[in-house]
Image 1 (cartoon, rainbow, N blue to C red):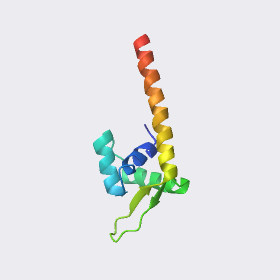
Image 2: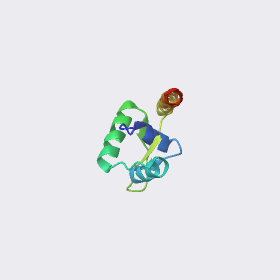
Image 3: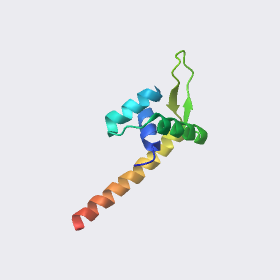
Image 4: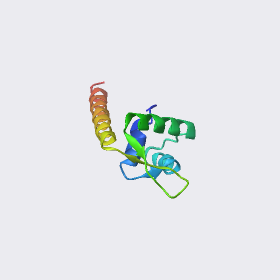
Length: 95
């Protein structure tokens, strides 16, 4: 899983989070540590696609929120991963 898109979207599906909280959440649920460059580069791409957006905050930390379009994309990607897992499991049984 080299693209952090699904990880970030899955993290934000739980609620608004700032960058460090996203990194810690991903580390907790996926065991993957995203570096700041990887995380913020992906955040920029996700904002450009309209899948997440920055939320106003009084804090100096910038929280992000998944959009409706981001939710659709998360469902699409999880369905694809589910299909890959089912096929892989079936093939391993056949091997």
